[in-house]
Image (tube, rainbow over all chains, first blue to last red; front, side):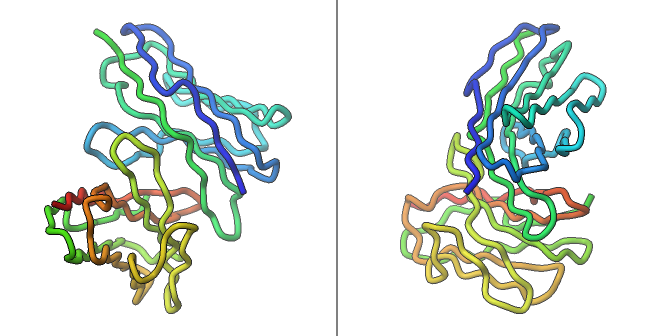
Length: 113
Length: 112
């Protein structure tokens, strides 16, 4: 089955800096890669996703890149703010049919004011 | 996105008892799932709740411990049976909606 590795487990940055979280996956059939943000005590929220037919997607300060050949994808957050502090999870799945994503172990992002 | 209501939001239970968690969606959905999130950990799939048939359990989870009901396309329950302190965790229902996965607000369970 699919295996998703996520690094780093903890990331500490100063407000205004950029943050990058990286994930690798094992199943070449995976074609959908969502990212979730989970604030303390709250549900995971989908913040951005990318499908395998594109290499990059942006939404304001957030971007995701995908390298299908190398089987890795990354989340980039620019101009970080304290409210970006949360745990971020990457996931990989095969869309269509029985949709069941495999999640990474999570990255705790801390943005210091 | 689909609106997912989950209850209870938290509970403290005694060892050996059972708790049933409810998940209600505001739209009909084909795929509903139940996840467990242990403190500081990732999201682990317990089972897929199938409407009109038995749930499909992941490795390490069994029906006797985590019975699931799915009577229709908008509702599901997860029961945590014969609880022990090791069952203390957050339990989340989730649904696939337009190709994306959305989560309920979670149930924080503490077993004494």
